[in-house]
Length: 529
Image 1 (spheres, rainbow, N blue to C red):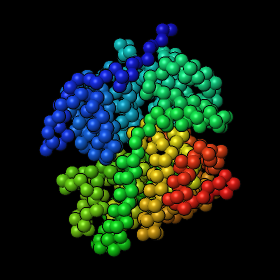
Image 2: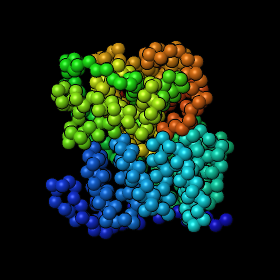
Image 3: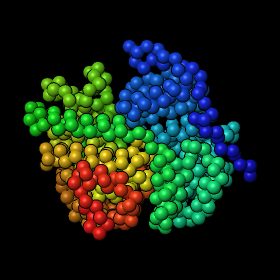
Image 4: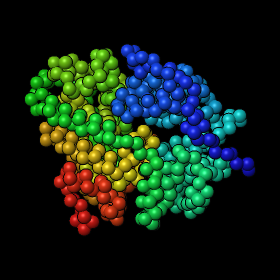
């Protein structure tokens, strides 16, 4: 069968690009610059947290260069990260029509529907594209469909589609990466041979090289520690962006919280009586067990899990827009915050990711973004519960370093950045737990996997839920999971991920130095802290 040639590197093929006119804000002057320079400017604004400015630049680029797909994809992903699913939906339909023959765009649109809680619509788009005889990049759509099936736990169908895609393009690194994840036992040797050949030939596109190294790391995991970490490091180095601005933002926010959101501050608010049962918010770093706890609670008949809905982020953005304000709501005066709390609750439950029926159940919401909004959550729902995940810091950091994230967290493909993020998370949650000891429950991952029933009973009691045996069999009723834990949570609990860091103490030294300095911890492989 004739093999498709890999597509040219998107970034390299554009070069400097055409000249465009960019106005960052209404009061800013119009600037003439090259397309590539405008893309870099928008990316810098994103890194600073100025998403609306970045979105404006991407939108201008899309209008002036309608044939370029990168601004369209970046704009869609920015709306998703802000929790603006309705705006993202409009953008998804728009770019799907503009780029109906562009596999890269259609894959991102399908991913949006999955994130929006509509996996059937994602599969419909992918299947419709595959039915078109004129569509050229079938291997990309087969790969995307395989990933969609994998997120639904349909591993056998996913593996079959990955193999079909490989028949059409045997040099597609992302297909090999998918097989490395889904079928290491049966396909690992063949995938490893193909990846090593690509490595030696040095023919992979620049954006494929990190994916190739992550795939090789996964294949060497548990078999060759030196090669495993070597490829893990190369994969992360190929993706990492400067993390200093994001870490500085997190630190400044924590300082604001400690200075402004004091016990006296919270006591100045009048008692509220929310209209719906108060949600449970799970807070934790990536790879700390948040998905596991969400699935345990979601197995209870009186709950409704909504995954990483970003519904509260969207509610906050909506209030900020109505108030014509950009500052953190928690930094406002109590007199200004109080009238907004009812709207925050209403907008949360009005969000598309929160089903109508959920108003009569306990909603279980998880996500890394929840860390930023614990104080505001506790004001919006005076009876809300916060589940704080705790896992050994080095196991958490290694697991993040091991993971090829595809959700734009490129500032954390770095051991030092991960350590700084963990320190900030730990110190921020320490503050909230001390301030609200009855509303924040710390759940230790290690205790959960060692004594599932005891920890589950404590968890349910904290969430004011009666005991139900289904919570012990959570893995039997998992549907679509969009996080990196989508394969693990479909299995019974296991403890083999505990103390995974121990063989890599030397390699983890950059993170260990920061953790020992900032959290006064001590790490040795013989006595783990």
